[in-house]
Length: 237
Image 1 (cartoon, rainbow, N blue to C red):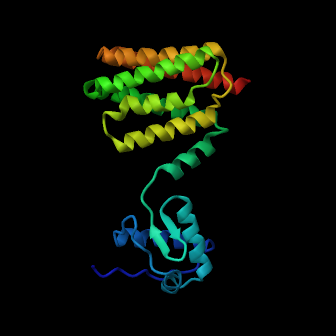
Image 2: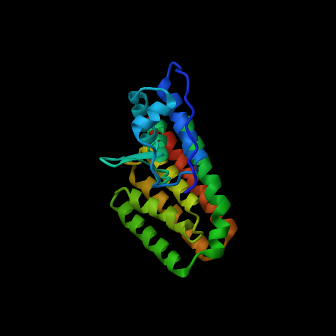
């Protein structure tokens, strides 16, 4: 195992634990630590940085909150496997009261999905199309009962692009969907809106099945225009 680089002591700024966080980040990057690799003991870090253990402890907790580190009780502190979940949770929370941010998020989703739908049409299997049709049928049945179908909606967008086997894309779709869903409050929609949303999803699937890129893009655009109208309605009630 190569010799690890040391952590340089730092001066005491007003927000010391923030500077300690940055120093720990730099240590992880400089030593190319990977998920599961341990950090030195807390006391050693405090001595190397020239700070108190409380500052190190606060910095570690902050880095845990954003998914960089994890503490294993009785064992130590370790680099955590990367996850989009902390970003997803914080994004959803931060967007709840911002109409402008929700609108921007909707536009990013629209551009992302319309831009990549052609690749899906090239790659998608008959099995995935059958699954998409099953999901839209479930949406229709729920819409006719005036029930929300948020779970099917999320699965639909994941399934639509699953064939591309792009893990970053999959994570982004989840981030956008969950944050947008929380921020936009789709829990109290009336029947016509639910039926229109089902119809948009149904027509997207049929355009993909027909390998019609232009129609698929047009249907996705229609879908996101409908979402824009829902946002506006929810924000005025």
